[in-house]
Every structure is written in C-alpha cells, then in structure tokens.
Length: 416
Image (tube, rainbow, N blue to C red; front, side, top):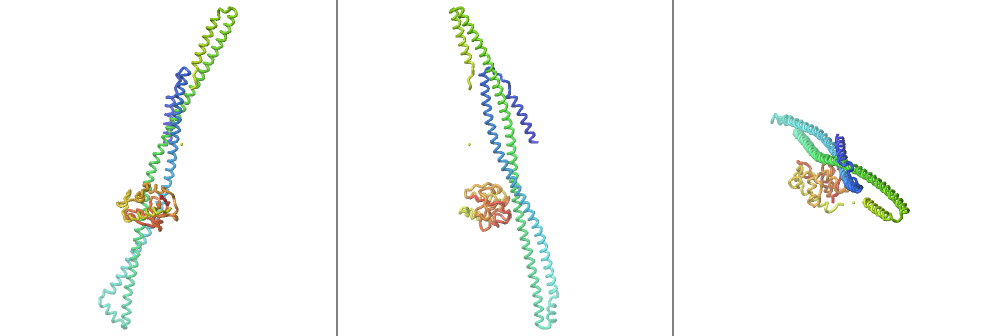
C-alpha cells in the first residue's frame, strides 16, 4: 500500500514537472535560442548534481537500514535465548517447589511422630519410669532400656534436624532460582526496550529512504524535461542554421549572377558602368559583413588499567540496583553500572547493554582479562578475574559478584 502511494505521488510530480518545464520555445533568433539552451544546460547540470547527492544520501541511509536490520535480528535472537532460559528457570522453580513441599511434609510427619513417642513416654508421668525400674531384670537391664529411650529420642532429634536442613536448602535454592528468573526478566525488558528503539529508528530511516525515492523521481523527471527542452532548442538552432545557410547560399548565388551580368554589361557598355559595379561590390561586402555578424559563435591486552577498572568496580558491591540509573552510590542498572565505572576513567561507552555488546574488540572467554565487558544478552557485567564478574544484578540483590559463567555468554568485549 505504501509503495502504491509512493508511485502515485511520483506520477503526480511527473505530470506537474513536465507541464512546468516542457513548454514551446518562444525565442526566434539563433542567439536567443542559444542563450535559453545554455540556461537550461546549467539547470540540468544543477539537477544532475542534486541527483548525485540524493543517491549518495539514500545509499548511506540504505546502509544504516541494513545495520539496523542486522541489529534487529541480533536483538530478537537474544530475546529468544532469554525466553528459553526463563522457561527453563520456571521449570526448575516448579520442580524445586515440589521438592520443598515434599520436604516440609516429611519434616512435619517426622515431627508429629516424635511428639507421639515423647507423649507416650511421658504421658503417664513417674509411673512409667517406676515401671521401667520394677520390670527390669537387673540394673543393667534398666540402664539398657533407659539408653534405648535416649537413643530413640536422639534419633528423632537428628532426623528432624536433617529434614529441617533439607527444607532450608530447598528454600534457599528456590529463592536463588527466583532471583535468577528476575534477572533474566530484567534483561528481557531491557532488550525489548532496545528493540522498540531500533524499530522506531528503522521506521524513520525507511521513511527517509522513501522520501529520497520521491525526491530522486522528481529530480530525474526535471532532468528529463530539461533534456527534452535542450533537444528541442538544439533542433531549432540546427533548423535555423540550415535556413540561414540556405538563405546565404541563395544570396551568394544571386550575387554571383549579378556579378556575371555586371561583367557582361561592362564588356558592352565600357567603363561607364564601372562605378555601379564598384557600388554593387561594396554592397556585397556590406551584406557579407552583416551576414557574418548574425552568425552566432559557440559559446573524495590485559593491562594495569583493566585491573584498576575491575578493582574500582568491586568497591560498589552492595549498593542498590535501580532501573535506568547510572549512580554507583544511589543505584544503577547493569549497563548504567558499566557505563559509570568506565566513565570514571574517562572512557565513553554507549548507554544500553546491547550497544555495549559491540564496543571495542571481541575476545574469547579463555582470553578474558580484568576490566573486560561480558554480555549475556540484555545484561552486562565487568570481568574481575578468577572466573568472576561484578554486575548490577536485580533490585533485591543490587550490585554484587557472581560466577562469570552463571549464564550463557554471548560475547566478551575489550575496550582498553
């Protein structure tokens, strides 16, 4: 639909341009037509320069559109990867929740069983203990029974502690998974914001590209119109020159005939008519000069600085995470944190995590050095060595250290 509208606009422009430029040549003399032709040639030259400029600008925009298309593919790929990771985390959370529920049930059952046994042992009070003494065959037997009761109690207590520990471990794992999911969702939101921004810029660039289509069409049609007019003027000049040559030839033939007649008369009339011959000769010279006057004339590696950056970044561990923030003290998001750290060393970086994924040069994980930027897809951190990064993680955890491979690494960038 947009292409059709563009074609309609171009057609309207074509009609208006042709009607405004291609008009009949009103000049009558060769010099007048030549002057008009030179003006039109100058206009055509200017329009051709415009066309060249439009083509160059449109080619630049076309290159930008290709880059934006590539960025969009990259962003969508990263978003898909994050969505897959979120799906896996959700499955792990569901399984962990089931394990947690089962552990709690087992712990509660063990606790109830222990309470029943304790209640059974103590509900009769001292009588039960007296019975234990009286029914024992000997002191040794009584001590054995007492040790059995104590061992049973100790078994229940240890078993209950083990279940309690299991419940706590599963709860901690669940909290960790929830945190990782939260961080992935934050990365997804950042990438989706970046995607929206790229889509907006892409739409503007595509509109600019289409505008250049219209401008180029108009300029080309103007050039065609001026070319047509110049051809008309050239043809008219040629026609006038041919007419002038024919007239001159006729005039010369007439003069030649007159000259021959004059000579014949001189032979018969003597010298009396000589003066007339001279006069005619003078007239001929004047006419030749007049004829001559009317004829127009042609008129372009890991460095100490990287370690300093890593050490400086670690100073802010424990400070808050803040979406859209760039403050190392009051709060920053992942890319804002990296931006602020590097900015402290006078190094300018793009603001978004996606843009930071293409700065500097790419290095492999085995080559990673302190100060390198690690991009995970919608999330960035600063490598600090020993397989660790420091990054602004989530609102709950803030700026913290983590394993560099805690998520799938998309790229590692070295800026210094």
